[in-house]
Length: 105
Image (cartoon, rainbow, N blue to C red; front, top):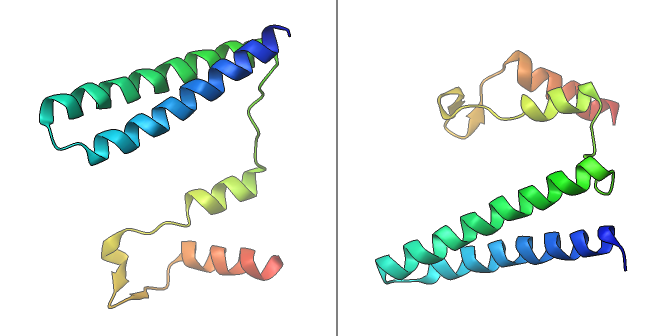
C-alpha cells in the first residue's frame, strides 16, 4: 500500500460522503439539521478537491482533456430559454454548428 492507494481511498470516501450527505439533506425536514448536513456535504466536497489537488500534483490523477472542437461544441450546445419558441429552436449559428458536427460523426 503506497501514497497513491491511500489518497485514492480518501478521495473515494470524500466523494461518496458528499453524495450521501447531499441526498440526506434533500430529504431532511428540520431546517437546523438540514443546514448542518448541507455544510457537511460542502466540507466533504472541499476535502475531496484538496485530495484531488494532491493526487494531481503527484501525477496520480490527471485531468482528462478534450480537443478544442469538442469543447466548443459542448460549450455552445446550450441555448437560452428566450431562443426557444413553442418547443422549437430558432435557427442560429450555434444550432447549425451542432448539426454539422453531428453529421460528421
